[in-house]
Length: 406
Ligand code: A2P
Image 1 (tube, protein in one colour):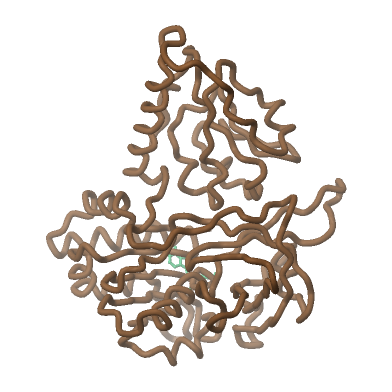
Image 2: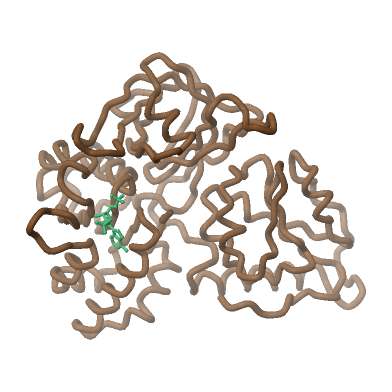
C-alpha cells in the first residue's frame, strides 16, 4: 500500500501499533518493510513510532512471528523510550467506552479493522488462513522460557562437492509438548553472547516434517538448514552433533498452513531450503490421506541436482501423489531454467487449476522469485482468458495464496 497520512493524527484516543517483545525474534523484517521508517530498534526491542506510523499495514504480512500485530487503545501514546525498555506488552488500559473528545473507541476499532481488511488486497496486510487448516498453536515457548530439544540426527543433503552444504536436522522434544502443524516455523537461539554481552538473536526455520513427527508418532521436528558463509546460527546448527541440546522458541506461523481438505489442490513453488514446508505438506498428505483426490504439484528450483535438497527421496515420491517439476539453473550446456519458466510451460494445466475454487498456491524461498512467479501467473492467466489482477486478491482473501520469502 502507498503511504498516506496517519488517519488518527491529532485525535485522542489513539489505537497504537505495538510489537510484542516476548514473541519478536528481532529479524528486522518490519523495519526493512516499513515504507515511512516508522519502525526502529535499539539493542533490545523493535518498536513503532506512533507519531510516524500511518497504519499502512505493509509490515503485518511479512512478520514471520505475528509479534507485529498488536494494538492498544491509549489516551497518550507510549514513547519509543518506554517501548525500548519493555520485556512484555502492557495490558490494555481501562478506557471509558463512548465519545472521547471527538472520537469514539468503537469508531477507532472499526477504522483499524477496515484498514487491515483493505491491506489484505495488497501485498502487505494480514494473510488469511486456509479455511480447512487445523488450528495452530503459536508462541508456546518464548525467549525467556525456551523449549530444550535434543539433536537426534544431522545429515548432509547436498553432495560433498557442493560448497555451502544443506543439512537435515532432527530435533527431539522428549517429554515436552511442542505441537506443530505443517507450514509452521521454529526459532533457534545459538548459545553465547555477542560482543556487547547480549544473548545472540534467534533465527527462524521452517519445519520440514509433518505434525506427527519425522516418523509417525514421534515427538520431533526436522529442519532444512543451509550453511551460510559467516552465518552464526546456520553454522551452529549445521555443526550440531547427535545428543547436543538446543534452545527452541515458537512454534510460529498461523496462516502459511496446509489445507486439511482432501479435495484441495496444492501448488507448491520453491527454491532451495524453501522446500522445507513442502516436504511437510507432502508427508502429511501421504500419511493422512494417501488417496486424496486433490492434486499436489511441486515446482522446485535449484542450481543442479546435487544442490537440490531431498533429491533422492523426492525421486521416490509417486507422481500421482506429487507431480514434480524439478528445474535447474546451472546445468552444464543447458539454458538456465527458473521455476517461473516451467510454470509458463505448464500454462494449460495451471489455468485449469486456477479455475478450481479448491486450488491453493504456496511460494517459499528466495525473495527474488516472488516477482518472477507473479509475472508468470499473470502471463498464464492472460493466455487462458483469466484475470490475474482480480484472481490474486480473491485467492488471498480466501486463504488460498501464501508467500514466505527471504
Ligand atoms: P541462479 O543459478 O540464478 O542462482 P540458491 O542455490 O542460491 O539457494 O538458489 C536456488 C535456485 O533459485 C537457483 O537455481 C537460483 O538460480 C534460483 N533463483 C535465483 N534467483 C531467482 C529468481 N529471481 N527467480 C527464480 N529463481 C531464482
